[in-house]
Amino acid sequence: MAFGYQVAGLGSRFIATLVDTTIIILLQVVVVVVASLIIAAVSSVAYSDELSGWVIAILGLIASLFSWGYYVFFEMLWNGQSPGKRWVGLRVIRADGTPITLSESLIRNLARLVDFLPAAYGVGIVTMFIDKQSRRLGDLAASTLVVQDRAPISIQSLSVKRTVNLGMQSLTKVSLEGFPVERLSNDDLSLIEDFLLRRDQLTHRASLAVQILNTLHQRLGLPLPAIDRLEAEDTLVAILQAAQSREKE
Image (cartoon, rainbow, N blue to C red):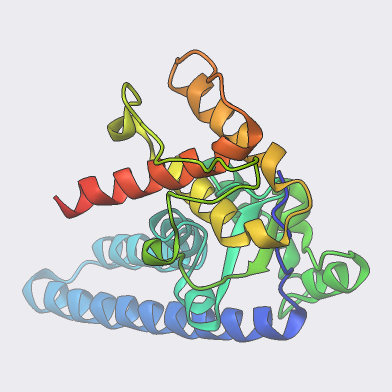
């Protein structure tokens, strides 16, 4: 399901990468300092070339992992955002508009090693210029996109009541009796939030609402709801409100 995201350009991605690279370098400096202190302490007690070599190798491995695991860690922690992307206002998503998963994050960041060649993301930049959606090789391999992230949806701006032109009738408040809101995952709620935030820009918003609602029921092992397209969107709003009410409690 595509929600009409605005693909991030090369400039904003460069700034985000610059911020992330700076943080990674600082982390690596910390590791080097720690390594130096440990080696100095070891040498003062019982100097051993072999032991010092092991300390350097282990801490060197930890430092190199920062440049790769850093992105995976934060993309999972912040739903597709690294500190740099969060500062600039970008987010990594799957090509279908749903939140990124661990497998996509691993693939796109493993491919970062190739994108970086021969230096300073040379391959990645060329690929982004060629691809219509500004994707580097890692994004192509993982079927992901980097998009402009919008402000979080405000529940206060949503209403579970909506007047619809059906003669003199109007929709009443949706009942969620029997729906296990507590079983919804963060990815489920993110999908609902993304849809509601972008619904005014969608051509087929009613049918998309039905698809999302059916997907949630299938994932939770529930029978598909007997609901029309106009009610589906109200139901998604009610589900999101119920989930956030539970979090406040």
